[in-house]
Image 1 (cartoon, rainbow, N blue to C red):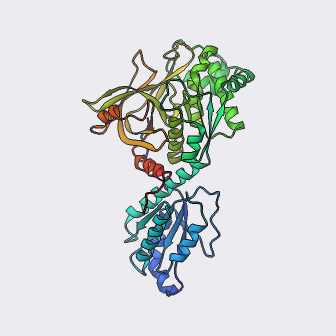
Image 2: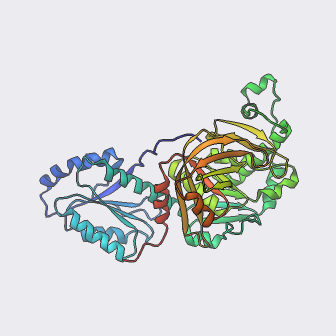
Length: 435
């Protein structure tokens, strides 16, 4: 699991709102350093007269309250947007900017609107501007989730009794569409997809063949023949075609039902994740949502895993699963699927370093957990799912995990930079607190 720097700020646009009572030249001279700082943080002003906000946009509203006497203009801006769109307010310590922003924020609370105030006491202080960029990223991810289409191929696995939420719950909670798709439709797509023809190792054509290179890069292919590898690629291509045809932003598969066909979905889900389509196994709905959320926030895939061992004495845990995106790995081996002993599963070696542990849950999906952890080492023990990672948890986290889990699977993602952003983004999807 590679260490990653904080994601670059998203470019955002903001509404500069000022009263005509203030002397324009004096105000412009005072605000120039602030506007320069906003440009450096990724912001650009929307010049007046500003168009009405696009109701289909995933972007939150950002308003720079430049003077007092701007409350009605901000109120009109709010009235032009849907109630779920967050309002990010910027204020400074002159021209009655702060009192106006406080009045606007109070009105947002009365309207039960998501709103945050960022007080720019000095244009030279990077902290509030970094917080603005972070809030914009969080709010944008929450808004994009509302329009997402998630495919569930088959029902959730029978053992996921806390993680098999239905489409109405997902829609009511996040606004996105959970599309049930018959597992028979997936079987039919696999049958209709040609079996890839892959040059065997040693064939001169294998050197320039991407599928042959993928197989050759495996440090070992223990009990996984080229024919088994080709069957896994066939599954991946069928699933990719369905995802494209159905315009899916993410998907999950009741993969154990496909074992009777002699193949597994581990490689398919890993490859789709690397291609930008978060993919979970076993029909796990919270994990699919968390994988998609991670992609929206960081632009990178993450790993869905089982907690195979949790040790409260040392605050460590061992995670294991077989669908690791290959882009997260230092190296990988192909082995058989753990429980069934057939097909292809991924045994990845993940580099040690900072990581983030995520989980969604609750009967109405109103709960979320995120914690900074450290990936200590990769293991390769028999008797477990193939990719295995031992992680260090925050103090006391192991005991809390054992006493109050949100479900089985968890999501492990590279870096420490986005756990607070994830929780802030999640909060933007919850009803705001009463005033």
